[in-house]
Image 1: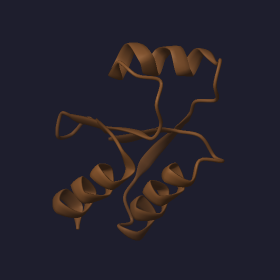
Image 2: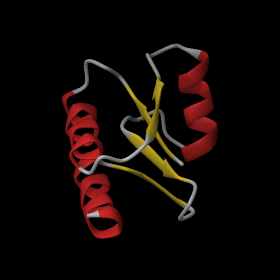
Image 3: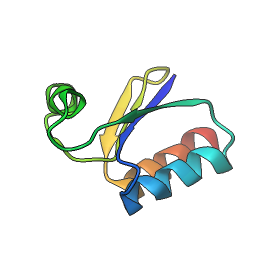
Image 4: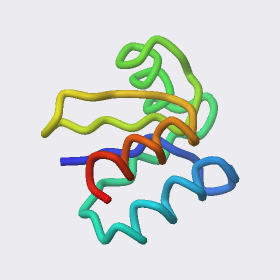
Length: 78
């Protein structure tokens, strides 16, 4: 399962959401507004409060940076 930790208003997150949709992948959105418990969980999970953050449980991969995420998705699922 793919999880995307993100904010709706973030343009970098929007790029990743568009790629997930283009590839017709099933994924879960984890909205993480600043100051939320989800943001604290993100810090524990990945070490930063930065979004977007992708977790691909099927491949044991997690990463930040929209361009890196998009490249990973294209290589893995494209």
